Length: 233
Image (cartoon, rainbow, N blue to C red; front, side, top):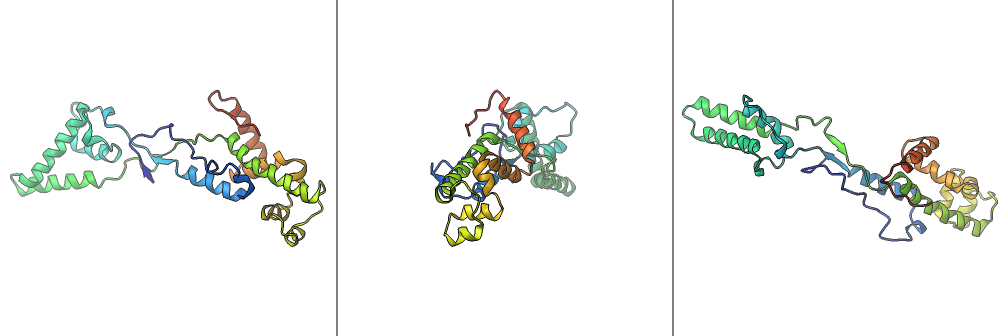
């Protein structure tokens, strides 16, 4: 799990298709989905807080506060915020007591407190994994995928016409595009020829674990968002 100082919606989807503008002539649907999935997984972060936002009550226990804030404030010890500096000063006092305390008990208590602070996991680790939405919209994802669909439709019609008469074994014998063979194996050729957009919807929906109608509804809702630009497909 990656950790960052501050989560930010400014992190954008790294388009896996930009390197080669003709990617759709060679990659499979699975290649694209794997690239998208990898980038989506990379967009999870452990939520952290800026130390400047720390506000301490006058009677609060500083040792307990350090235990709570150290795991989730990566800039705590570099911050100039007054309450953050108060915590850092207290941590320095604990270190001094650990080595120069007047009694063994004082030194041991300071040592235990320091160990407790530094070894304490993120206090909200179970729910602190936040998702930074990728810049790539659902519509854009469909548009990328649809480039493959349109290309395969063109290739199929060029070689076999408009009739869905070729099964995957025949395509294998003809040494056809392996992607067409896979579509034939899944009995998608008819949809590829007559309703290519529906094929794209079906494939993307399956990848996102949605029904085709569910994906269409999400696309419809996304189009109403004022800050999303859409590729035509």
